[in-house]
Structures are given as structure tokens and as C-alpha cells.
Length: 408
Ligand SMILES: Cc1ncc(COP(=O)(O)O)c(C=O)c1O
Image 1 (cartoon, rainbow, N blue to C red):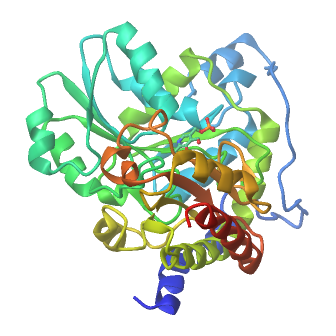
Image 2 (image 1 turned 180 degrees about the vertical axis):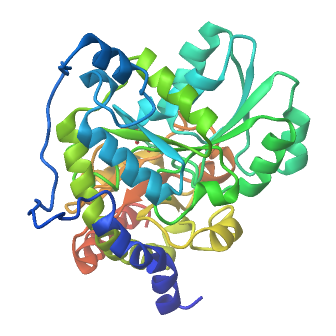
């Protein structure tokens, strides 16, 4: 694909969702009455009822939008749930207080002591820590599989007590795009669930069309979009799973603050337009990096050099602006770290999805699946924000030139 076609391919899906993002979960004026464009932020814990009977009746309606108690959802939480369910193509969505809480909630809801979970080796690091430190304590066994595992490999790892596959596509830091329909086939063939962390693909990968049972969003990233909110979402494909999930959220006290819901709803309105620009800037930077002598491989799902690129081509309608870069093996980790420290336009910090560009080294401690891809040379993860692409490239050029000089 030439450069112009690639720019189109990474941003097509964002343009397609622009009108939906502006309109979803908004009020229309009724009966000659005016209405604010944005709903009011309602803060509350106690909800008052006209009688004990009315309070008891409301308590039975926990799967709806009724106000029962602040910890069981506020009006803006429910509104955000409707927005995310529509964007993800889900039957229902449960908002969680963080992206990590959204990752852990389906495991708490669907796994029991004695059950087994197949987890991709390249999931978000803290999720792996949760699996090791918490799930194991409660008697759940976990097997990590290579993110590019074939159907036969997954079948070989299957046990009678396997209840779920948990994956994240593309993989955290190592960016393997995975064959989600194949994983769904394997899980469903055994009556199990496929749980997908779809944070990278919000709006450009429709998880339920490809067979996922549960889709997770760290809304902290692109939807909130301004590096000022921590929030998550879990969406379901059917009513029964929704009930289990919602009950577990209530039982474990998972709730997001109304201000965080408001900021995320506001972020959704501009998500496609930010992403159209960021995805195009990211592919510009990725192609430029690919042309540099210091770089051995660019792990951007829209480029053939990324593992699983064929699944991106088949299943995605666009790309986000987060990708990986592997340097030539003759460069050392300290040289790369020095190069990163020298950059002016890229923030050094956790998370991604905001309007600002970020960079972080990829270390083995974060994800273990790097062996095949990211152990080929020092590797970093880069997030492209809304800055001018020329400024970003000029900054990276200065950094790489400086690093290369040390090797001549
Ligand atoms: C893919 C993915 N899922 C989940 C999370 C967790 O999100 P939060 O930071 O909101 O807990 C992250 C955070 O970086 C992430 O990258």
C-alpha cells in the first residue's frame, strides 16, 4: 500500500463513526422544551423514595437505569454505558472505576475456584499480576499462550476446566494482532467465553461481530482522551452475561464518579476527529521510522512488519496511534534510554490515548511475549498525539542521530 492509501486505511473507521460519536446517548428536545446539549452532572449517594414499597420495587430493577443508590450507578454512568454499548455493538455495558478494574471484573464474574483460564502472554502487565497474585489465591489456574498461537496450539492447551480465553489484541507493547474469530471458535466449541481487551481498537474493531463474548475498554485512553480521567467499561454480547457482570460489579462495589463519566462522554464527542488526525500522524511517523537505518522493525498493525498484520487488514477499519519500534541489535538499552531522555516533544509516562505524544521503553518485565519480537533489539513504545508531525519527526531525528553518533 502506498503512503496515501495507508493514511486512508488507518483513518477510514474514525470518519465513519464521527456522526455517531456526536449524537450517541444525547437528549433530544421534546414538546417545545429546551434541553442542554450536555446532560447535567448529577452527584449523589442517597436516593430518596416516596415509600418503602417504592424503594423495594426500585431495588429489583438493578439491570436497568433506575436510581437505587449512588454505588449502583448514577444517571451519567448509565448514559455512558449506553454510549459505549452502541459504539462496541454490545447488548449492555458496565462502567468500572478504571481500565484495570474493567479487566478484572469479567474474571471475577465468570471464573470459579478450580477453573482454568487461557491468557495471552502479551496482556497488559498489571492484568497478568492480578491473575498471578489474586486469581491463583482463589484457586483459578492460568496458562499463558503465545499471542500468535494457532488453533491447534490453543486446542492442545485446553482442559476440561478451561472456562475462558482472555486476550488483548494487539498485544500490550509487542502489538501482535490476533485471530479473534479463531479464538472465538475454539472457546465456543468448548462452551467457554472469549474475553477481549479492545482498548486499542475502540470504534475500529467490532468485537462482537468477530465472536467475542466480552469486550473491555480502558476508557482512560482515547475516549476520555485528555490524560485527566481513570475509568473503564465491560460490554457483553448477551443478557445472561450482563446480569452476572452487573451483579459482580455491585457486589464488589465498582462504581465510577459522575465527573469522570461526564469527562468521558465529552471525550467521546471528539474521539473520531482526534483519532483521524492521530492515526494519520502515527502512520507518517511509523513510515519515517521504518526508513531509518537505526530501526530494524516497526510494530504498527497497519504495516506488514507487525505480527498478525493480515488480521488487522481483515478485521479492522482503522488504526490507533500507539505502536512499537525495535532498534538494531547493535544499539544497547542504555543508548536507547539516553535517546528517549533527550527527546523534547515526547512525554515520558505511563498510559496513552491522550492528546499528547508519549514514549516508553519496552522491557521484559512489562510483558513476557516480547521474546520473539521485541528481544530482537532495544524496543520502545510510542504514542502519537495531536502535535505537528513535522515537529515530532524532527525531534526523533535529533534523538536517533545523537544515538547513532555514539555508535560511529
Ligand atoms: C490495554 C490496556 N488495558 C487496560 C489498561 C488499564 O487501564 P487503567 O489505566 O485505566 O487502569 C491499560 C492501561 O495502560 C491498557 O493499556
